[in-house]
Length: 99
Image 1 (cartoon, one colour):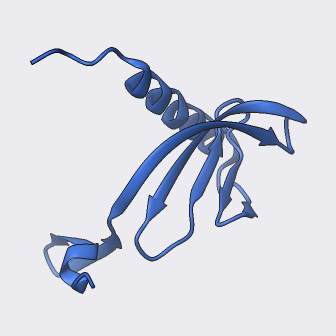
Image 2 (cartoon, one colour; image 1 turned 180 degrees about the vertical axis):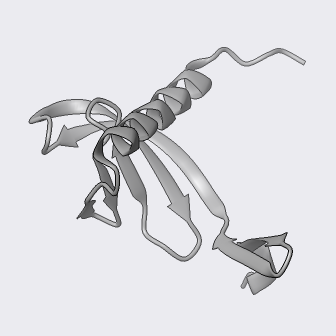
Image 3 (cartoon, helix red, strand yellow; image 1 turned 45 degrees about the horizontal axis):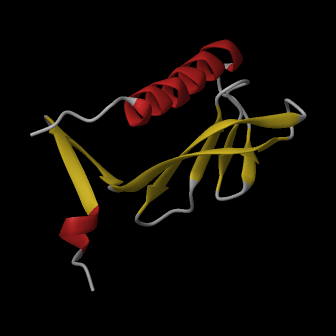
């Protein structure tokens, strides 16, 4: 069993402390996007306390633990999400340096 201190990270800004769950893993996959109506590249992020966050790399649509999530700012949220997935795919596809 992990202690709660190992599953959370906190940042202090003066009188404000913000705590969030740590990232447990990242995965890339090809899956069906219901908004695009086709198979697309997806990024998946796994957190200690929550279900998986899944983002389509084509349209930027996001699902949290299987639930469709609305956009707070449609244009910028979509662009940010697409860039996150593209960065994930680029980093994981890059050749590893030999020691």
